Amino acid sequence: MSDTDLANDGGIKLVMAVVRPDKLGDVKRSLAETGAPSLTVTNVSGRGSQPAKKGQWRGEEYTVDLHQKVKIECVVSDIPADDVVDAIQEGAATGEPGDGKVFVIDVEDAVQIRTGERGRDAV
Amino acid sequence: MSDTDLANDGGIKLVMAVVRPDKLGDVKRSLAETGAPSLTVTNVSGRGSQPAKKGQWRGEEYTVDLHQKVKIECVVSDIPADDVVDAIQEGAATGEPGDGKVFVIDVEDAVQIRTGERGRDAV
Amino acid sequence: MSDTDLANDGGIKLVMAVVRPDKLGDVKRSLAETGAPSLTVTNVSGRGSQPAKKGQWRGEEYTVDLHQKVKIECVVSDIPADDVVDAIQEGAATGEPGDGKVFVIDVEDAVQIRTGERGRDAV
Ligand SMILES: Nc1ncnc2c1ncn2[C@@H]1O[C@H](COP(=O)(O)OP(=O)(O)OP(=O)(O)O)[C@@H](O)[C@H]1O
Ligand SMILES: Nc1ncnc2c1ncn2[C@@H]1O[C@H](COP(=O)(O)OP(=O)(O)OP(=O)(O)O)[C@@H](O)[C@H]1O
Ligand SMILES: Nc1ncnc2c1ncn2[C@@H]1O[C@H](COP(=O)(O)OP(=O)(O)OP(=O)(O)O)[C@@H](O)[C@H]1O
Ligand SMILES: [Mg+2]
Ligand SMILES: [Mg+2]
Ligand SMILES: [Mg+2]
Image (cartoon, each protein chain N blue to C red):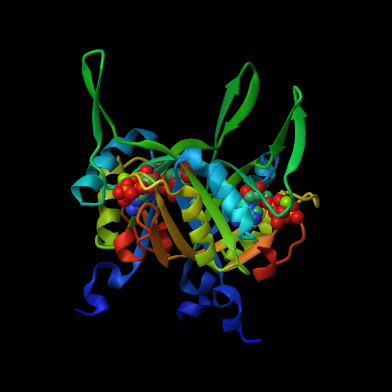
């Protein structure tokens, strides 16, 4: 079997998503069903392309420009990155502004710390 | 128009910076003025190349070796990554040790979760 | 000297690891001994390939599926990424499930904010 018969053309991919915190459970379920249960979660805040919202507090104007989100990182080799992207989108989408983004990045090597295994099988 | 006429040679870039927490506001303003307002912020800690500082607390010596920083991630397609780097540097620099670093990483694909749009236009 | 005589074939690498929180100190020491003391640390949670654990609390069943971990990011140019990977593994391994993973990602450019220096020397 040639490399290009393997998922991700024989490579390893990092799928990084920023989603609504209350969608984390749905995304985890969706990823597990796709066969990609391993993930790393980080609490983040951020803003997309919408202008900042202005509010008032005790007579002072303030700007709410960073919203709480969670970052989900999922490294895959045998599962196509596209399937992971689809699973995340399915779990995270509400159709309202602020649903988030997914980015795919190439990974050159992977190591499982417990075993020392390297490469695609370490993912 | 050929791909190479596009910003970032037709690619998508992740600009990842680690800066002083009290410079976040200046960096956000500087990025917005550059036309790259979208970003993700993470509270991190870290150390650069300086040796750790030693202190004393109740007679015990301790080492302060991780300083609070914020990580700023900014993915761009139509705006050159170099402009984003410049905007971050302009917002974050004080000239003193500890100002931070900026790293540029290639992104293979991007998806806007709300619309399902993919590629450069999804950024 | 040609580019390929340089560490990392003349490139810059991001070594990203997710490890047990109580191994952070050992990993920092191991990295410093390898000549790669600079790093960024993020509190994260995650799960690997093991099935989720079920528990009971006040009669309710719940699932513990995300474990606290720390993410360590280390960007290097003159030090081979492989040496950084080995240092992290040496510091982080216990031999038990949950020790974590290390991923290596290519970095296209780096900037030291204080000096404006770019490229390998900025790392
Ligand atoms: N270009 C980007 N770079 C880095 N982070 C981004 C980018 N775009 C979005 N994010 C992250 O995703 C979160 C959600 O973004 P959001 O969904 O609002 O994007 P958007 O482009 O405004 O799309 P929408 O119109 O659907 O709201 C942001 O809070 C931010 O953390
Ligand atoms: N090589 C690196 N890899 C990962 N993170 C880094 C690296 N260098 C710096 N950082 C992050 O950037 C933060 C600020 O670094 P700092 O500006 O002190 O770097 P420096 O090389 O010591 O430069 P300076 O001499 O200007 O202080 C660190 O606390 C760390 O989080
Ligand atoms: N494929 C992955 N993608 C993203 N994060 C991962 C991945 N695999 C592991 N992690 C992160 O590393 C942490 C530790 O993973 P863990 O060591 O349990 O992996 P594992 O494959 O189950 O190996 P082991 O059998 O040694 O436990 C997880 O909690 C998660 O944060
Ligand atoms: Mg938005
Ligand atoms: Mg420093
Ligand atoms: Mg495990």
